[in-house]
Length: 189
Image 1 (tube, rainbow, N blue to C red):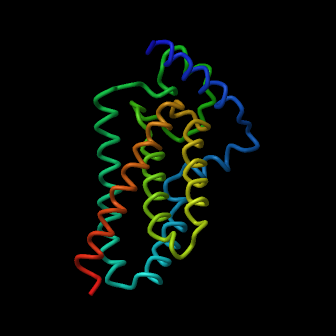
Image 2 (cartoon, rainbow, N blue to C red):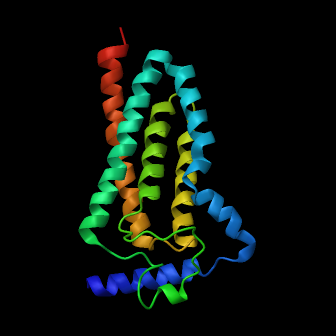
């Protein structure tokens, strides 16, 4: 059963990865670059400041740093535990892959880009939902695009991406709840 699931995952990866073309490669490389999201993060921090003030923003910067560190470390733990080779390193698959990423890490299960972007989307989307009700949907779409970029550039299978997104949902929600508690406990008077 697991072997069949992994075969479907490989087939879907090859299909999605090979949809790409040189025309779009640069755009997807920009999307997958972790520094490309910095303007979005700055906008979100500005919105948090405008709606919650300096004290809450300072608190949330520490919470967000903790959330990103948590998702990164859990991603690394899963990668080191499962040791599933990335498609750009897997025998029999790497020759069929459109690999355009600048580098290919060793293991891929699960995607850190996917978990971090989804955690950020859920955290910021829920936090700002009372003020910007549609923002969460924009952030979810952004996260899905970042996640797909990992398949496009040839470094993650779809299961890596889906598991990363799922982990990001739970992480983002947990850190959102933690933030509400901390604001109530230390910021609200």
